[in-house]
Image (tube, rainbow, N blue to C red; front, side, top):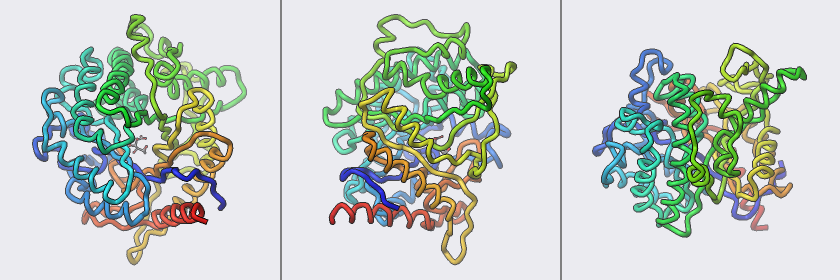
Length: 445
Ligand code: GCO
């Protein structure tokens, strides 16, 4: 497998606070909307919740030692807002910041570049009670939270992501209700869309005021959308879904254009924008992170949201029933570069869920190795073709809380036994380590 990556390419792995940390009340922290959502009957498979998760809050040193053993260049983690501002607003909880401060220092000690995500879905419950992202003050709440974190860490963290997958937490959290806060409320979703757009811009402004040397970006899930047939209605439905999923946030942020699909999606709830608000939403960033997993197959379906029907994936699929289509990673990188370039690009998430079995302390996850190999080859092709890809983060470092699926879906390159909290590096982890080493060794020749 000949791979071509630039000298300073970052091979990393990613996690998020709610999915791995546990201890939602530690050192003054208060619950997030996901702690609340997990209490809703049938909201999460098997009634799982984030009370312990991977116990990373206590085992963080062991987990960072694994990062060092895997020879990773970078680690993408998220900060839990409810640890920093337990009530969502007001003065920072210094003990909450201490956790991420020590984590950052240990990463730097191991020569691992931190990439920090400010919002990976764990909104303080106190703020949801006031209206959450639909509240007109939410952009300022987020700017205040940004300042609290950046004031402590911007001197050591070089890469900052404001939002992880805004489309997912908006659509699943406020349109379909599958994620926290579990709303099916297009009016709420429409206002949240506007405020998240403004919140990102105010966060970027705040970050830049805290440091002139950091790089600021986003992490958005981008997918190829494939029409189920050549029927004109299927093609139209597919382009509508592509606009809604891929461009609802990125076009206003990066092209100062608002896709028509917003009116189609939000209808009479579509928020009004003043000219100054629209120009505020358009914000220059330093990099765009792409979370890629699979394509989506779409057909026209009149009685559904957006008149769009999701069609079954083509095999092979992962345990999430997501179609395995490595070429799609190249396609979305090329799409992002051509549409929003010349921004630096990162693959901020890519990975697969498979049921793993442990035998004699070994996890032979060959399917996951195959998945990473094929997707990393697409990254190498993108680099060779001049696409400014600067890094790749395997999702995920650890098996963790997979949102509404609970702990059933295993994405980690490190196995977690949730009854003992024992970690075992899977063969895919060793594969990734050896690939990183060989790419680096190849640079020295
Ligand atoms: C996402 C989230 C991750 C998920 C991963 C697998 O992309 O949805 O960023 O938290 O766990 O993508 O679904």
